[in-house]
Image (cartoon, rainbow, N blue to C red):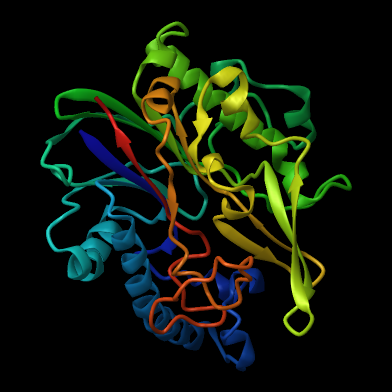
Length: 370
């Protein structure tokens, strides 16, 4: 009996307009910066027109990428609310796959922009086994003090013990597949934005993600018990905003590109892999073919890396020793630089930078859950 699960950061699946760019240029779309805008009323009209025009192509590609996963369950990040998810599934995904993801789950988390993690599920697997919802638990309310995870490094960032650990949530979903229990923990960790104390954005924010990873591990161990945890069926899925290795890109289009795999000394992801707690299934792919995101700030800073994860419990990992995740890259914009032999056909109307399915790639894996 098999189950296909995917994780996908769909990049701002919004149900509302964001007008904050009128007063904060950092939030303003670059296309509007080309024009002289007289007042806030005019800005709102232009922003509405821009957002609507941009959203249609983008969401067609997002739906195509999800359809390509052929997933029974999709763990999602950056979803505004259930209304946005319903509108997207009915207006776009339904046209790709027909009746499918009728069950949708989301709880408001802690993100200041209101983007949350969510789960969409079919009523049964592709081989006809029922998928039954059992329960849903948000852990967005947990603080550093609640789990005893406060440390001096967090204090240097101005964080206090009473503050919430998760920048979004760790959404826990319990289901039964063909009568067998199965648990999902869906996460979206702190972003790597914001240099501080002479550190780049990744290292400056690392203590926050380390605490989030420790919290996820603690939640799972508290649920199953330390002795029972390795023997249960569970996955941790989501955008961890961190990587254990990068493919650093050099060269140019004229003279050819170079690709070098660089291992990082530290990563918050390590917390969830230490002592065989879980396995990063994507690391079963060749080292040059694990990336789910292309990052660039110009020719001097370009790399490919894995930010999107499906971590399997030891029990699931052993039972599925040959399961190899797929990474769907057809929704990437044309600016993404692919290593030799990895280029794919892009979806129709994909742009150089946008429209695109997302800045992230979906990751999907089919598991035997007997």
